[in-house]
Image (cartoon, rainbow, N blue to C red; front, side, top):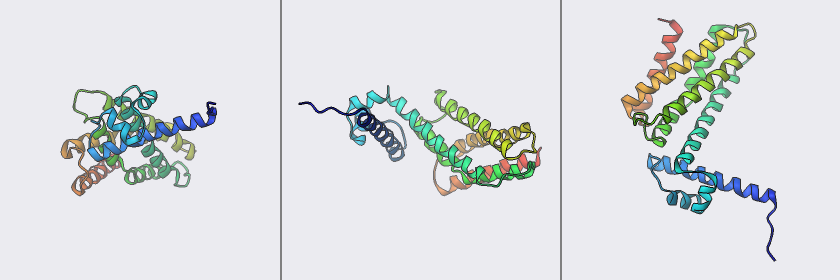
Length: 210
């Protein structure tokens, strides 16, 4: 007699396999510094079959893109948590600027950019995907944070919140490019120091204007 598997158990097993594949891909990227691994390597690390990998993802690129999206989502959630941890204000532009600046300082943007650089094979290879993923994520974050700041600072014009957040977020994209060019996405102390210097330069430039 063949045992039947309930829909709930089947769904749980499917979710567990998907999670194992994504966790294995992330570990391989971190350990190898690149996303250049085979389906066999990924399946072995995740303790699943090749067929199971392709039941969930169409290709290695699909796996890697999903991992990158998840990594960015975690960073975005951390960034928002930093913003929402501050008390709601009365609409002071200075107070809002300080809130977003503090969140940028407390969020590991450099570490995330390094991971994306390695996972997606660098940003200067002619492949538009890395830039598209990062830009789309920053744009979405800008809209969400601007709306949240406007809601929490009732006396401020929503346009002020959007301009403030977009200036800092797009500025972060700019310094990220300079940082990558100077460090090659290194993770040593010197690279981290440079990132912090560039971030402070960005914050000060926007704070004081041109």
